[in-house]
Image (cartoon, rainbow, N blue to C red; front, side, top):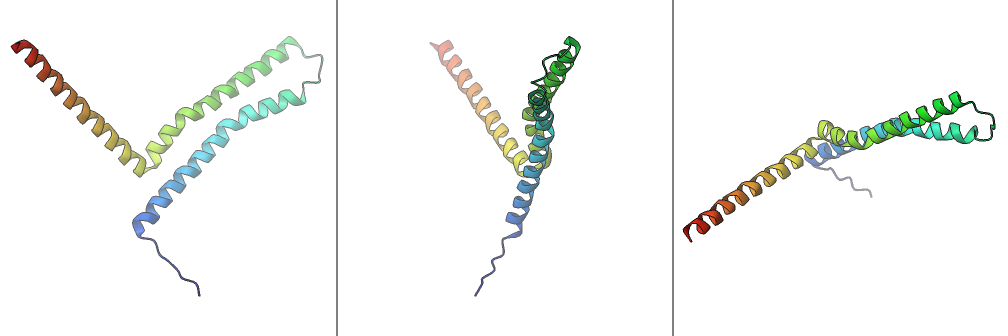
Length: 121
């Protein structure tokens, strides 16, 4: 006997959002890491060549540095992926920012009260 369980629609929708965010992130990581991987592979395969011209060494260095920059972009893009593709992430981010704002306003009120007490003394 097999039992089938059905999840509520809200849970399924959240799971689909998280899966889509994960797939976009995996795709982005792959695209951003692939150039530096290929560059390192090329450098490793051509390491045994003893007569590389200075121009060739400069070009290889430039390609490697460009690939490294692309790999760094991956770390900053992840935030935007979450923000643009995930409703859950946006809701949590807004909730945290609202809480931060309310904490800031309560701290300002406390500071004003302390300053008034000091003025009275």
